[in-house]
Image (cartoon, rainbow, N blue to C red; front, side, top):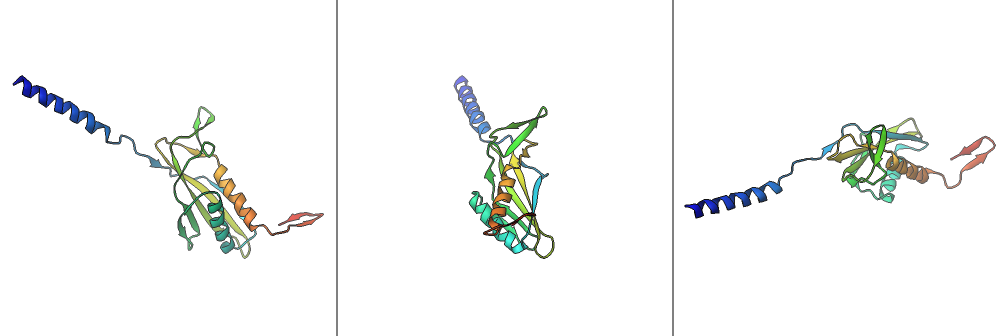
Length: 163
């Protein structure tokens, strides 16, 4: 009888040890508040779409989805870099690799015939809550779009530079 109890106890302990390790306790959550960086360009909405696709590709992002009727482009999920997102702790920014992922969302807002406003934000998914974007990746995309849309030779006068 003791041998049977010992075998059952050993099997029970082995079952608990192996069964408890393969169940996740935490699940990552997607942030609901997206902070947008924006810039207005002297270009049509169609030119801005091509510039955004180019900027995403050059900066290492893959296109996730395109909703051209609403003017929204999103990338696939990419790992957070050490300077792109931070945690606001004790009135300071705590940068570092957190194992989170982010997705860029770009909105193309036409502002007349040859003016378009681009808004780019980062949606974060991670176990740590309250992560915020530093705006580095968003400004990098906006700068690449600006370089793509810039004329080959700027017009420089005594009144300033016109691109």
